[in-house]
Image (cartoon, rainbow, N blue to C red; front, side, top):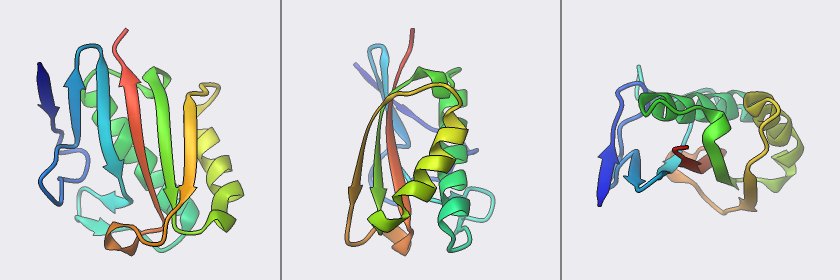
Length: 126
């Protein structure tokens, strides 16, 4: 049985999908882009600012399910430019603290709303 997840503290879906789906003890978050949920606009075109906003959106969805970043088991990071990897890696690491989930990072030619980064997450209810 699946359950769609929604919080108004993260951007609304811009298509036919959910912010996340709970299946058993796993929560699958749709890819989050750097949209401010209060304005529904993409934040400044800066990789650090965009990474912070993406992580803020992820944290909001997790918190709506009484989870935190320490419950993340896997992330996939999509970057417009792999040359930004080191900067993203540093900010991503700050956002996770000592927690180190499994991760993949890939460069893509284009992302929704022409953002610089998108991150999807799988978390576990313990």
